[in-house]
Image (spheres, one colour):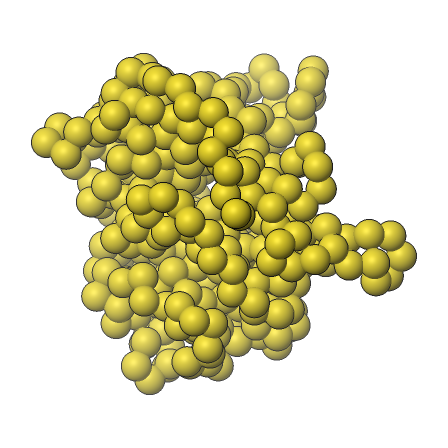
Length: 337
């Protein structure tokens, strides 16, 4: 068996199919203050009733007293952000929350904490990656597989992880897909795709996944079916922008990449022809870039003020997060049905 349920616990149920999931309220984000040298960060818009959700963020503390990188996750039932010890991914229907602590106690053996928000029950799941891709002894020392960047499919039925070897973090070994309701894993070998930022992403309907391929300075975007067969390659620049509703617009007609050095611009491409549609500036603030679709006609993107909604002519229609110039924050926005 590749998956082992380790523990089961009960928490207060926080969501149901009939009740909208509470979103973060206006106000400063915990952990981002001038006192720590991060600069300020605050929610300045009502995030309820939107096609996206702010589920978590990481803060880089320039004057750390402990861990220099702190992760915070939104807890709807408690109406606040709390510190967590790993990546958090929330399904588009808001039912499932999966936390991935990273840094496993045993190399190659990962652990997930899964919470069903409709029942309040949580469990830990262990995954032995060495069953799918063995450790390597190339280049001196042993390289164990690791998985990163959990991504939910648009229908909320599949969870995608990028798998790579620890000392070859910019090159993939493959993907691990966990299917609901049992989170049964399936490994697909995709060798040496370029995964410097974000790794593999879903397309608009969850029938394909995609990744940047090649070498920096000369990459393409390659699509694969759920059996791991390459079905299309776009001769376009940049890394796919997977924030918000993802790389592809909701209709699947267009997709977006961060397409200039230092991620200074967002390029929108036609999904049928692969031709450029438009190019929009990304605010060169030195902060980590947020980039993905908000709806069919707008992007979720880093702006001079923080993170906002931008139309395809480059006009900021609304600011969601206001960020100080020195704020080193990694917010995670995902789709919300």
